[in-house]
Length: 388
Image (cartoon, rainbow, N blue to C red; front, side, top):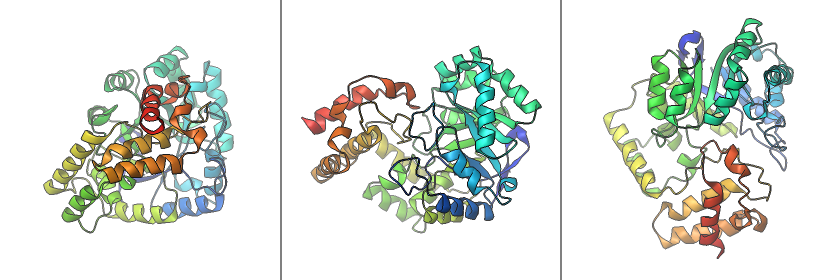
């Protein structure tokens, strides 16, 4: 697998990174990670060249973002027996739980223990947007990062991002960041930081980590048949995952693409794709086909939700991502059959207490949503469509 120089850090990172926000489960809630399967998946990926493993404080949690989730300890378990030394380990400072600079040191020290390591290779200030960046500046986060680098607790400092390009530009130009993590895929080229942000960061010598490369599985699970047929005509040997990942690796500015793999078959497929991908590997015909897919979705997408789950748990019990998935499905294909299927899914996939009409518009979810979606307003629209 190709490894690219990770910007000004000088480190070599694998094209494929293992994202640990959606590890496989063997129990009723997100904290019930299947430790043995997760370990086997991560170790297989590392054995075949993956050297970037990404986690965060709240991943696989059940007590809200302020409480530690199960992902970091699961990653530590997987990286025992010498595997820790074979990877660049990334985790993130939970900005929403920081009230002073002392909190930053407290969280980092706790993460080092949870990850069973004496240093974090790539430490990110998590989920920056205009409001959280202002708070981090008030608490002098850059002084914290400098101190943590000097004392060896972290090797390289970066941030993950969810806001407009103008905010991204301000953050990038405010500090000598070594890398950034952005949402980017062939649908989201002008969304949040987007392609403009990618180019800006690259021009400053920063490493680029890509999250949501398949839009939380949307580009596979919700691809209409006519678009599947269009892509298959151009590249019959490629899967839908091939299209999404190869489009990203086609761009030399992209260093590592995170995939949240939940099954061994996904590990195998992603390793196969990464092994034969390269910069400038797509043809004009390939890119034109993806332009058609992008135009198709732009006309039909109602809500730009990636099903990341950051909005959960809802105090009223509403399953926000699934409501949005069904809502988008309703409009994805212009046929009564498709609309009937969405109605069936709304009743079949959602318990009564999880449905949009149970939303009380408290707004708690909107403060957590990385996409800045007007969730309460959209829930009202969904309730009108499906529940009236």
